[in-house]
Image (tube, rainbow, N blue to C red; front, side):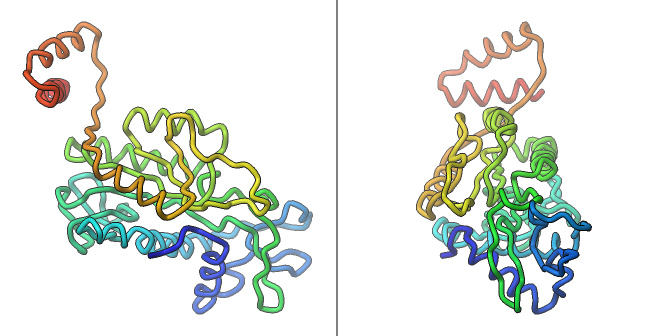
Amino acid sequence: MADLWTKNKEIEFFTESQKFATFEQLFYIGDDSRYCAYWPKSYRGKKSTLQSRNALIGNFTERYSVDLLQGFANSQDLYAVQSVICNEIGLSAQSPADVALCKSRQREQPVANIKAIFEVKMSIVWNWELKDNKLICIGDFRTHKGNPGLLRSDTMLKAIGKSINIRVSGYEASQLPIIILGNTPITESYISKVDHLHNAGIVQGFWSVNPFPMDDNSENIKETPAKGFTRMDSYAELEGHLKKLLSDKLEFFSSMESKEELGKIIEIANREPTFEKKAEKFLSLIRE
């Protein structure tokens, strides 16, 4: 069973990456000759943009997420699979699902084999300095100039866009839960947005698997009012949310109808004998 995200996981990333990447690909190099994971807020020298680390941390965090979910997946007779392709729901080789819970280990999956989709939006959270070939933590994300993970607007927009693309690919995706998996809090400006996306059914949750993102354990968002965002504080809590995610039989639907047409659909659906039949009739009518 993999642990939730900690500083040790970031040390593991840098240690592993140094086997095939140069220091210049992993760290910013300041005018003061310091090697730092992010520009410290106190830094006043020349700055450059570091892109070479993105693919490395992206692959590392996807593999980490597979390991994190694998134990639970196996308990449900499923597998956590990286880079899943399913053309039926718009998941191509160029834009696969980062991680999915599936009935088999194959990368290419029919939609019937996929039980949940996870878009991984993680990055280095703390700032690290490489000094005398040793990694020293020099502060949490409040002390550096880069916004990591779910604190970045472009990251959030990419995650939302990917989720919408899956949802509008066809009705085959209507029963698939989608989770955005991160390792940071969200900004206050996104609180209402993630709750609306959750309530609308586009995304079933933005989850952070980093229980202590701040060095002094100061207050940060645990969950938003409608639980669109949740910080997982233990593996048991994560497991509980995963069990609920798979046990809830959800159905995504969306439409733009006049009140009169919507009223007709509701009236016709209400003639069915059971709640489930009413729902099935409503969905079939609204999708015609």
